[in-house]
Image (cartoon, rainbow, N blue to C red; front, side, top):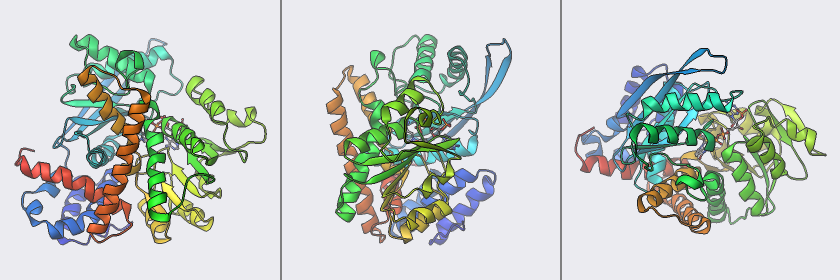
Length: 452
Ligand code: NDP
């Protein structure tokens, strides 16, 4: 899609970014979307232009790339590529997850780190933006192989992170098992038990509610958005959720608790459709316990069916769509199918799951649209709360954490909603989230001088 930036200075900046990294499409997509939103800010705030905040914010403070050698179960040496982008530390230590997936490259890590900067700002907690990962594919690997990979990955990463410097967490392909191995290796190398990672197990410093946080937070955001913008409630709504990983499972759980009917979920191979409403225990058994494919669900749950290929999930009629798998999974054709079926709201659980064309089509059709950097911020919010608990050497109850999460998600919705109004784009939560997230980071960068 043509990036239309209604401010000459930002347009030229985008052209420079494009010229510098022409082979990074995901990064350019994320930067283009944010700069589009920031045009009215650049118009009104020449002081931020003068101190180069816009130019600085699109360039990571540091990008680390490293070799990750490890030995597989057959005794063969394997070499993967590791990354950590330390994007912005204006408001706190770098913070953001690690992704293990064969598609990982510098473009994907930079887009995720860039988005994370604004997301973390929106939470109101003192966290800068970072992201990392590897093109290692944990699928089909034994526990011992995953452990050896994690140990090798951390042997290099440990040189660059720390509880007051950079605090990674999980993302696609990095769950409790991987965080445990990574934490163990960091502790062994540094001889120091610290809160250097979040998403830790409950027996060694993890926070109650972190596993559920992104999915639950997504539903808290959705509830607030539906109520404030349409006077509607979640109860009784038909929901389609893509993915069947951490975010998707706990989005489904909270949606069901709030009285909605979730009729479909997916993985990268296909989707399941269950008119009676998804049996979440069956999904958890397959995905969390057996690490199996979603296809198994149709074999086990009578009345459900499996459809090969995940993209067509958006052709299923629903009131609410929650894309919770990966970037650019919801394209303009999917958006048109959702609109034709009368969708009321699309709330992003994954990072940048909608293409820019899809997001625009949905907004133009009057569909409520929540961008991931606002609506999926629950995960990093509870990661922030995990950091606080580790610093205090204390643990809150599940209810305490969940209540704080709900307040944070409501706060994010209202911050985005108000910023959209103040900057002449009422109801546009993409613009609002970008502006509200940007302003706090920008003021901090200005106040701290041209250090980075
Ligand atoms: P998981 O690894 O737990 O699950 C990922 C799910 O998405 C799986 O069902 C997976 O299917 C599917 N998926 C992954 N890649 C693709 C692809 N290329 N095409 C289609 N489906 C795919 O990850 P999470 O649930 O943690 O993360 C999902 C999304 O949410 C990501 O965008 C992540 O960045 C974002 N997110 C996660 C947070 C968290 O706290 N975990 C916080 C905020 C955002 P398969 O098993 O077949 O690969």
